[in-house]
Every structure is written in structure tokens, then in C-alpha cells.
Amino acid sequence: MQPYDYQNLIDSPAYRQASRRVLRQLLEALLFEDALPHCTWHGETLTLPALRTDSSPVSYICQAQRTFSFGRLRITTPLLRSDNGVTKEASDPALFLAEIKPWLAADEGRLSQFAAELLATQIKDAQTLYARGNEVLRGTDYDTIEARLTDGHPYHPSYKSRLGFTLDDNAAYAPEFAPAVTPLLLAVRRDRSHWAVSSSLSETVAMHALLGEADWQRFCEELNRRGLQPEDYLPLPVHPWQWDEVILPGYHQALACGELLQIGPLSDRYLPQQSIRTLSNFSNRSRLSLKLAMNIVNTSASRVLPPHTVQNAAIIGDWLLALVERTDWSEPLARPVLLREVAGVCYTPLAPAYGQYGALTSIWRESIHTHLQQDEAAVPMTALMHVDTDGRPFIDNWVKCYGSEHWLRRLIERAWLPVLHLLWEHGVALESHAQNMILLHKDGLPARVALKDFDGGVLFFKSPLFGSTPALTAPPAEYLRVNPGSFQDTDNANELRDFTFDALFFVNLAELAWLFERFYDMTEEKFWQITREVLCAHQGRHPESAARYALFDCFADKVTIELLASRRFQPEIRLRTRFAPNPLAQERKP
Image (tube, rainbow, N blue to C red; front, side):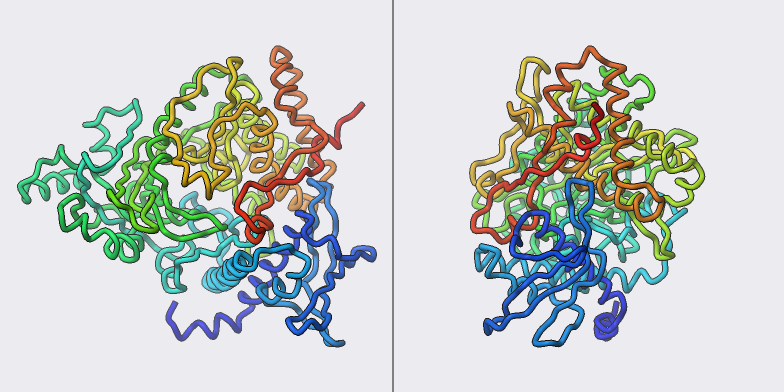
């Protein structure tokens, strides 16, 4: 997108669409998180009193409905702002935050930062919608869908903030735009780096697998040309944006003293996935994907790769694979595919400056294409909640072909139930929000699920009941101070259940329930009844695990859900949750 297009962007329907979505998700999140107790209801009309900066009263008005899924509220009309008798559609999330600030109990600085995230989300979402035009994703291949989905997080209001990216950066490197990205290859001294590799790969095999024959040969030749021994160095790919913005400005001392050496661009072309920093190999789709550190903030989280997660990634992947291999996956269960992180490299200066912790790291992950059976196709799980530009859901043909109830039951059995089976059988909770799941299907009928992103998204139960857990590198204390939820084991069973519920049900399945109610004449109550029936049928087939079903009780009256919006502006950083009604419990029959 050229600079002169930006005014057209701001004047476009895409900008208004993005503005409505940011305000809708912001208000829905604040209402769910009980941050606005002073709002009033008249039928389905919600009125929110507010104050202008000069303390004059204004109000915000919209239509909303409370849903069965965790008691979530859904805004069903654009948000209106009424000021001195003049009512217009609201469009400014920063102004909205400023005018409801007296009721938020917010930290001033954190609220201002949150406003900046929302404004960045608004313009970058508008930019992607504007560029997409009328493109329909239904029927396209996995890699195209993975890259071109524009939805982002369905609950978090900062779903596309990408702080650190300019709009030109967004156009160059975001998955919705970039035709391809070519990472740069560095060599890092082995004695100045951390290196972890899967036990399924010998080091010699690993080097060839990670780089490919041509790049491995070039890596060795360049080091030999400099009079260096290739075995003294490790390959470390870096994102081109990270090289320009972070590595070259901040790591030139390491380049000057030879701890880092620039080899050149990788031979293969890569396509950014939804997470931006993960790149799938576009030249050879069966080759490993790259997960590269980037000093950007998206959905309020930094996208660097802390060294302890890089060191743990392959260990966790190997351990999970061993669990899956010794687990009974009798029908209607289907053994899940694990896209393991098989290797990782990280470099940290001896005296790291601000922003350098986890800034020069990389992880290699298995490709979904190496796991597909002949009659299978893959689709990102996020696509299941997507409504295409023609106004029809992405899954419309599949649901109409197989019937909504049959298709949904099959989806729960083949994609959601395996995640719960791992929780019940092994005390392992996976952060299975939709971006970490891939549906494998046969002509649109769910067949299996692929799971990924284990370096920071796994929680283990500490109990002799479930055997040993992997020996992992612990996060440093200073990292835990600002990331209080970054723990990997617990002796609290409810924490594991809620960790699973938050991602798998609240962020993931609740969105599908809302889509089914709007498009397929299936009430949310019926949707969750079907889900519950699938889980109960599984438990009935395996009564020997009754104690574990009770320990991780998925039918409890209430579960705790993380407050993703409120923690962005409240005075101190910590994990914040609230109890929410469990839609599975409400469907329990006497």
C-alpha cells in the first residue's frame, strides 16, 4: 500500500467496519469482566453513562443480548454516542475509554497504553480489510487460509495492535499482505548460545533438516572462507524486520567481535502465519516452519521468544509425543497430531540491554503437510468461526452437506475431546485456543486435530497419580514478575481445568456456538447440550477414569476465566480472573 492510499483507507467502509469491531469487542469484554457496573438495561437496550473531559455528561447506547455461553454479552448494533441531544455512531476507542474512565478504577498510564493498543488495532484491522476487498477464502488451500484470515482474537479488544509495526511494516510483513518473507541466516558461536534439539534428531541430521542441503552447505562454506570451523557455530535465522529494527542497531558489538556472523538470506521463501512471527516454508511445504522472535506487541503480549521457552520447546514436544503414543485413542476418538518444536537456538549478550531478552532466538516446528494422510486436508481452526466476504460462514458447505448436529458432534469428538482426554488421562492442559489448533478433515467432515505451540502453552499437574513431568528450564524471576501466568506446573487441579476451559471453550467453542445460533438455527443451549452429550458418552465408555473426571470437573457450576481487557489498565500486572457460569453444567440433566 502506497502512502497516498492512507486517506482513502480512513475514508473507506473497511475503516468503519474495523472501528465498530474494536468498540464492540472492547465493550463486550468490559461488560463480561464486570468493569462497568453502572450501565443500565431496558429490554435489550444498554445505556452507559459517561463524562466528557470537561465533566459534561454524555452517554453510550447500543443493543445487546446475554448469551448462554458463559453469560457473555453480545453487542448486536453499532455503539452510539449521545452528547447534548446529538447522537452519532461512536468511532473513537480512546475517547470512549477516556469518557468511562471514572468508573474503571484504572491506572492512568496503563489506560493510556491500552488506548494506544486499541487505536493501533483499529487502523491495522482497517488496513487488512481494505486490502482484502472481496476475497473469499472458502475452498482455498491451507497455507493461503492460514495467511489471509483477517479475524484475529475473537474476544481480546487489542486483537491486531502489532505495536512496533508501522503501516508500511504491516503491509510488508503481515500475513494478510506479504507474498513471502525471506529470513536472514546468522551464525552464532556455540559457546555463546543455548541450543536444544529433539531426541529424535541427531545433531548431524538436525543441521541438514533445519537448513536444507543448500543453506547448510553455504553456512559451512562461509565459515570456512573466514577461517572458522562450522562445528563451532550454530545457525540462527532472524526475521528481516527484526534484523533492521532490533538486531543490527543493538547487536553490532556481537557482530564486531565475531559472536554473530551474517551468512545471508535463506534460499527458501516463507509465508507468515496468523501469528506473524511463525513462517511456513512456501518453497517446500513439507520443510520445517520457523518461529522467530519479534519485538512487537500483539494482543497485549510481546512476541519475543524467551530463552527458557526455546530450551524447553523440544523437550516438551518429545514428552507430549511419548504421552500420545502410549494413550488409548479408541473410536470415536482420533489420535491428535502434534506439531512438535524440534529445535531451537537463542543468543543473549553478556550484558543485555533493554529489549534484548529473547530478541534473538528461533524455533523450528514440524509442518502440517508431513502429517496429512492421502485423503485428508487441513484448515486452521480459526477458519471455522470465520464469515467470508460473501456473508456466508467458511464452513457453510460442510455444515449443510452433513447436517449441523452430525457435523458438530463429529467436530467435538475428533478435535475437542482429544484435548480433554489428555487432561483427564495425563494431567496435561494445553492452551488450545483456535490459533493453536488445525482441523484435519475429509471432504469437510472432521477427522483429526493437529495441536501446536507447546513452548509456552502447556501446564502439567504435579501428582504421583500422573507420573513424572519433564525436567524444564525455569523462567528467571524477573520474567515471572511481569508474566505471572508463565508457570508450567501446578498442584491445583482447577487451575488445569480452567486453563483448558479458557482457551478451548471460552475463546474457541463459544465463538462457534454464537455462529451456529446466527446461521444454522441452533440455539446456544442446544449447541452446548450436544457438546456435553459427547463428553458424557466418552466418560461412560471409560468408567475406569471416573476419579480423574471428578478431579478435572468439566461440569462444575462455575469456572474461572482470565480478564484479558481489565488487566490492561488495572494498577498492577498480575493474572486476573472471574468466575463464570459453565454452559456444560447448565445442560446437566437430573
